[in-house]
Length: 381
Image 1 (spheres, rainbow, N blue to C red):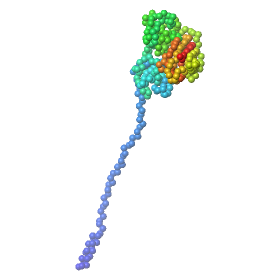
Image 2: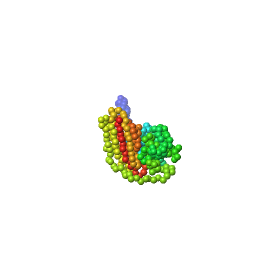
Image 3: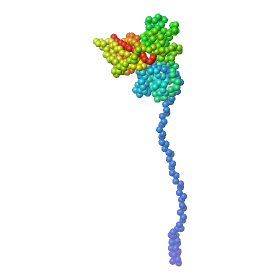
Image 4: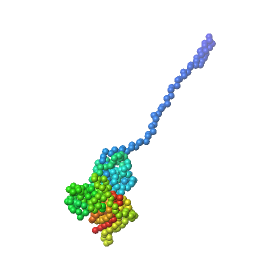
């Protein structure tokens, strides 16, 4: 009995220790794998500089002429690149101005669609400059196709009370008197620019003559020429009923080149109290051909930098006119009188110890050849 019980227990123990029946391992379905898609990085494009706005003109262009030789520049400042030169008397059309109003945007070369900048103080204008649009240096300007400005009457202001004469000489009878400060309309000039023809309605022919020495004129360019009897010789611009325009043949020849320049003037003089107090220089000029410009250099005797005056006189002969202006360091001196033939004792304000130039130019606006011999006299009192 005990044996049976013992074997039963052993059997039960062996049965309990037998290896369990293997169970199937479930197969796991793999989870889907998601690859993160990054937001694309945008490569910045270079910013596009907008084109300068084009100014469509809604104004009247202003006609102008150069009162001295000057540069036309790419921007409204003296250090900008030069696009070319305007000679004395060259005509241009202004279509804009800078914010300060001291530079004018002009069509250059004339008649082209291009523009450049010129200093306003060296341009004689004949229109409403204040009405021109302000133009930034980077702006483009659309030049109007028909940009010819409406011409204005050329005028002069009388500096003294003077007689109005029937012809270009004091030998002609007086037609009346005009007071100093009177503004007159110019209609012509004599051959040497010493007498100016003006509109004078009370005269039989509606015109009279005044001495140029007593009239301050902005510009004589383009005025008809008359001989010493007051007969029309040449009309550079069209005029209503100008009559039969003829050019009187002359024996004058063009002036020969003398090789002078700003760096090599025709004469250079330093005034001194114990030496020269008067400079007299004689030469000749002609236009549009021949030598058309001369330079005379001088240094006034004055304590530096004290201001004083040099007195100038310009005598001419021939069939042409001459204008002369004062320069310093190659730049016309502002607010000084422009000399023309027949002007005497013209006061030119200068500074002591500094060199100045008188630049003389032949006026070639009236006829095929205008010749003038001249004598320039400067006196340092």
